[in-house]
Length: 118
Image 1 (cartoon, rainbow, N blue to C red):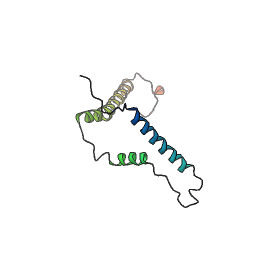
Image 2 (cartoon, rainbow, N blue to C red; image 1 turned 180 degrees about the vertical axis):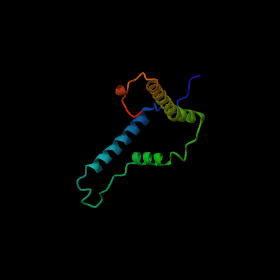
Image 3 (cartoon, rainbow, N blue to C red; image 1 turned 180 degrees about the horizontal axis):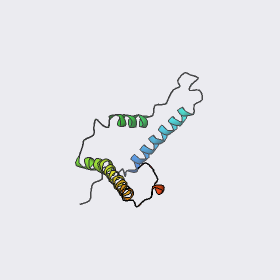
Image 4 (cartoon, helix red, strand yellow; image 1 turned 90 degrees about the vertical axis):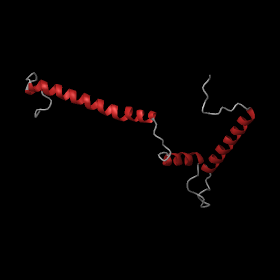
């Protein structure tokens, strides 16, 4: 059994042509509005409204309202936050204990120490 793709693939050439024409028209309108030198003269200046940017900003501002914790997201949180912190803490602690043991047993001379007050 083939796995179903979550995205709908469009294969109809007519729909593809319509989408490309619409994309081109929107792009041309945006370029026309951006490059209009009289836009601010008519007091119609300001920022242009871009639907894609607005959708993205709306998505980012409401993403936590729609977040549902799952075992996968919990595991990713642990792997990306807790494991590196604990690993780094362990490595630093082990290195400091090794260095302190060398200093306390007299294997490192005082003049060879990097930090003289330890």
